[in-house]
Image (tube, rainbow, N blue to C red; front, side, top):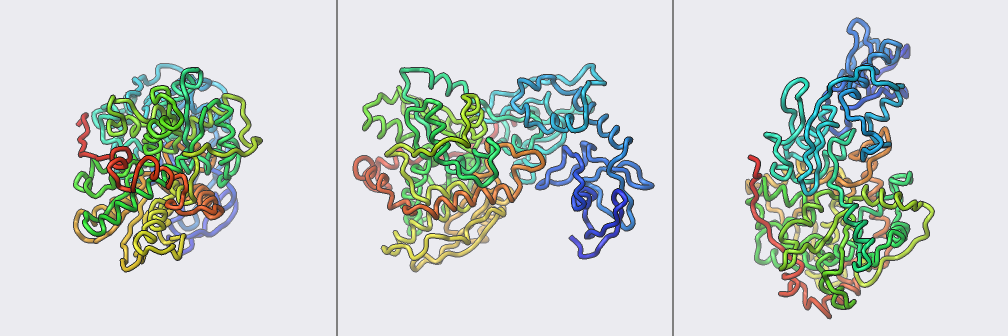
Length: 583
């Protein structure tokens, strides 16, 4: 933004702002909140919904989100005429929208609904024929409901600008305009990577995650089933937001208590799987340092794996063969845990609570099933789905006492906690690798230089005699910067961490919708969630994955050594190039 100052008048108040400031931004400095729908602070400016119109002298109504101020501009943000025009726009959107608010998943947390209420829209003045489109719900992860789409374009922009996938576009004209993949094929047949960022930015319910709550309710009601749940690191840093707790609230113990009250027979921690991933991944990394291929690229993010298989298949040999922490723990639940607890694996129903919509897709991949084709993970709930289940039972999360995870798959180090934030996998790996290389206790546990909430980080880290070149990226448009350098042979990285979602798992496609006026991609929300995880790590006495006694016992009694044949059979996998079926 320019250093030059522009003088203008807004609602009779004279002010100066930097050149390049939009009317909406200038008004915000005066405490004026202009309504909006298509606007999103992390996306390009579209100015398509026109809800944010203001009256500019000698110009008339202009979109405040996309109009930059000019010298001596005179702006009026409210008047009877402006209010009526905005109401007309919202009423037209509503009259082309389904009348199912009471049964809609976004009821009470819908931006269109909230806007209609704040503008005093109480009747449908333009009722008549409206658009009709079939729902696309065959995907493992993402459901598309075009009847609820208001054509704001947020989903199109996040898919292109943040994720670099370009799967969605507006197609058709006029009344038949619809947003969807090329040729309106099903999401799983397109280049969709299942990340769910379209869900996060959608102001209505035109995109939603594939619901799994009915399957979980049925399992909990079945007396023959032993229902086990695991929760990912970032869940504890975000679940409180669904109960009006401020972002940055650690709700770990209360979450465990709530899960027990829902009726789960065992409550395990995905952090245990994260510790196991670090042990196996560190062993793999040291092997690659000697024998290649380098760089090794992390494989915990299923959205990234899908992106690699579709857009960067040449990099498949560079991906770590380690399963994700979720899949590792699910595999152990139906093998080691079933064996030691004397439970028939067929009677174990494994539920994973994840911040990531793509985990529903990961669960269904053939690589994560046993020899009979049975998934190791039976159901994946997003953070939002778990919040709804807890509320459905009338449980007040904020008022619950703390409880602890069950052993042995519930004990974890702080290194497991930081998996939920971008750079966390890298940092945990460096903690373990430094000791494995030097044979001495690590002289440092915190590698703050690899923490990259802003999206992209490149640096060098000394490990013994090695000066390790590392790259960290979240949001796949950022990842392309690193990946293109690798493909072109321009940089010699040793290890790269890629997380599909902005900020890493803390910004996953299944995290809580933010309160009105904020956005899930907001850097401040992501920063506060990350601080929770780093705070948990710092407060733990056990901070290195290799020192987890439950991990040591697991290798001693069941797996043998890191990288053993049994470890590879149960904890490792492989990937292959995938071409979209719909193209």
